[in-house]
Amino acid sequence: MRTPWKAMMVGMLCILSVGIATAQQPQQGGRKRPGGGPGMMRPPMKGGAMRGMMFLQRFDTNHDFQIQEEELRTGLEKAAADLAKVHGILLQIFDENKNGTLDPKENKKVGEFLMVIMSSRMLDTNHDWQISEDELGQAWDKLAEQCQRYNDFVLKRFDKDQDGKLSEEEIKAAREHMRRRRPGGGRPGGPGAGRGPKRDR
Image (cartoon, rainbow, N blue to C red; front, side):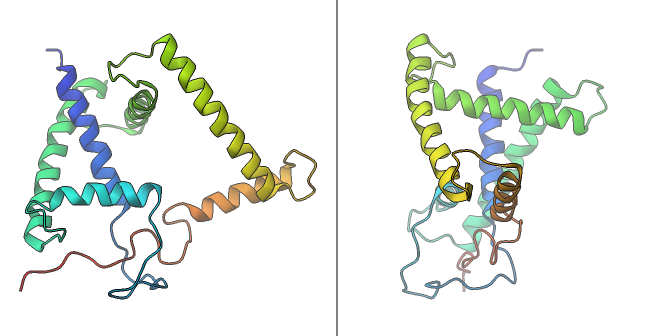
């Protein structure tokens, strides 16, 4: 039986949401960041942290901007149930050897599929799951500008001899810098090192 496309897409988005939430879980034992105390201003969130906050807001079912313990428990139980449904869909699509699990090779294909979904959502501005010539042209203009800014930023940061290109040694330094910036890659405190949900008393 063919899996309905809409159901599969809901499943894919569920996986992405759970992944974002997992990446934003508080880490025990992390250092306190400056400005982290009650009532103090904190640095503005960027990228993954903001997406994580948007996901966590789904737990706030009474919309009081506070996530209670019961709300967190209910939200996580629902996410787990949704993910179980998604796992069944993924097995139907990617479990080529029909052993009831996703081995590393099959998991890689799942990851590649998710990357296609995320990329498509960025380029498909009218959300019809197709990329037209106009959308491709718009994407080219936008991404070309972003690539130029990225290239300029990297050269400014790592091109130590200022010759307009990165040597092997400079590329190695850039890779090491990016590795340290990844979650769990050695940054003090780690992502999401803030307060957890307020417990009901």
